[in-house]
Amino acid sequence: MQIVETANEGLKRAYTVKIPAKDIEARIDAEVKKVAPQVRMPGFRPGKVPANLIKKMHGEALHSDAFNTAVQESIDSLMREKKLRPALQPKVDLGEGYAQGKDAELSVELEVLPEIEAPSVEGLKLEKLTVAVSDAQVDEAVKTLAGNQKSYKDAPKTRKSADGDQLVIDFVGRVDGTEFEGGKAEGAPLVLGSGQFIPGFEEQLSGLKAGDKKTIKVEFPADYPAENLKGKEAEFDVTVQAVKVPGETKIDDEFAKSLGLESLEQLKGLLKGQLEQETAGLTRTQMKRQLLDTLAAAHDFAVPPSMVEAEFEQIWQQLEAEVAKEDDPEAARKEIEADKEDYRRIAERRVRLGLLLSEIGQANGVEVSNQEMQMLLQQAAQQYRPEDRERFVEYVRQDAMAQAQLRAPLYEDKVVDFLFDKAEVTERAVTREELEAAIEAEEAPAEKPAKKSAAKKPAAKKPAEKPAAAKAEKAAPKKEAAKSEAKPVAKKAAPAKKTEEAKPAAKKAPAKKTEEAKPAAKKAPAKKAAAKK
Image (cartoon, rainbow, N blue to C red; front, side, top):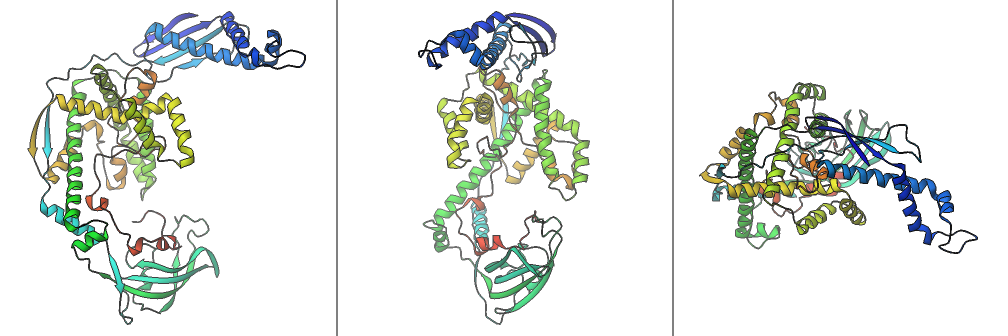
């Protein structure tokens, strides 16, 4: 094999690699010897088929396998000989002049990871903002939970329905006089004013009593998901079975027991723990922002353009998905277009921080153990149907990039925790509002586009994407890679990850299904499937 360097500029490298025809032929001969004992051919005893006949029968497949193996081993040898750490997969081009029996000349182009001097982890100073959870906050969480657990009781038969009441209804819907699929239900619960059904439906049921019947006319929204109903006028024959009024939820031990707990005191303890976990997550977010900003300010080195472009594409795809959900997609798209260079700088910052954290972890022996990797793999597999889980596990085990994506978030957390342990940390007690304000204030300018507006609320958030440095890990598997401060995003090929902003405690408590959450309401044809205003 002959290697000639043809380009060396910045992080870009290019080479020509010549593979002699005799090397490829030798591989074919070796493969023939390997398969010969299994080859069967009329007129020959098993294992006695001549090599030239085997080549004649299977020559094309043998050459293809031998050639692909030779190319891969040549690339591996190039990386070892030149001590290259590719940022992404090298671009390999065979050209149009190659034919079987001739030398193969490959053109190899790649970008390499920058040489980063291992940063000192001494002298880091961080401020930790802590929030104490008060009894008043716990009581408020209990009240919120109780408010979400509405129960309804039958109203007097003479009572006319009003907003907040629950109706139990039968209905049949028709378009152009013909019933349509899914347009019929019996015993469907509907809370007036909930916006559960399409506009105009609930409003026409106000003032009815149990036993009343009414035909209402509505128009399906232009964005209704069923193509055959979009923008169509419809009539619904509605019968009110019952009118129910909200009952007051008494906060006591019985309420706690209805949630599967033993006592109100246990419920309060559970909610307090959730609130503490939530504020601890915010505190970690605040400290991590400080840490990343400190590292970003102290290190400036060239990063592979291909990695930045790949990261930017991830960000942009998410932004475009968010724009599509806006009330005015065109206005939102114009705004993100105006901020495009800001988002490109975000991508560059993320790649740089990912490589930096990877270097710190490598230099200080931070690792993700095999046991931790297996746990990640099993967690990720749970997102699939039982019959698909084993196939997913096997895919990840065989794909270095998939492994890197799975490993990267945990690896980053471990590197961040390592740096927290090394830092000089001072604590300051604050309110939750002050903590949240500090997180927003610490968001680096490069992470926050200059222009924000109501039309672009989702787009203004930091986009989530695959960890940037996971790409570096595949290219240089000896190095652990860390994601670059990317928030988790739901992906089928990645494990479900916890966000650092915890959900409200009241939503996490064990909850009893309320009547309006039953499947019957979800099946109602008039329900608006599009995003509710």
